[in-house]
Image 1 (cartoon, rainbow, N blue to C red):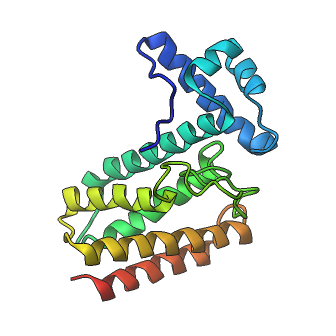
Image 2: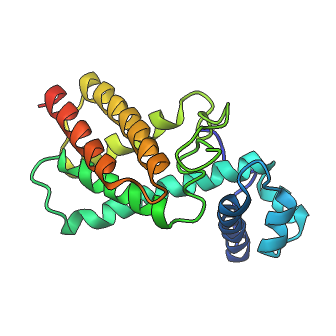
Image 3: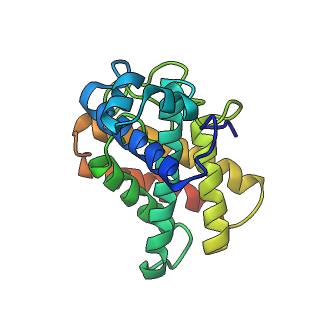
Length: 212
């Protein structure tokens, strides 16, 4: 996968600085959007020298790429933490849980309405800026990376089936979910509840038709 940092922070102080820069990046994305975001302002708000910024990130895109990776890790962690208490009679029950967590992050996580897992949106719900569909990986599109991470989780935790059929169906499901949830947040800044429910129904029925 594409590296998100020029170098990894080895000391606690460096790690804290990187996290502050990512936090301020997220807040600024909500305030001014991606195009008006500047490395200078991120560094100022994070209270780090601009030279320190460039020790860890090559440019603004590299910073946002790291934020997207952090968002994806946080999303998967939230799902994993909910699994022990969730009632999952079948692996497709993971669909509702995953969509609920994604929607919760859209509503509450700074910057997530502009950059969730890589693609940079002009405004919540889209459209996306050209060339940002490969923010997580230079070879694979963002949704392919998301599908791969979800596939691993589903197999490890729920015994989801292996094989090309599952792989293909999951990427289609992720693409469909992405499209419908963008529509939900274009319709209502908080996410249209009816469209979110339709998204769950669509994906569950699709996967039930294609998988054992």
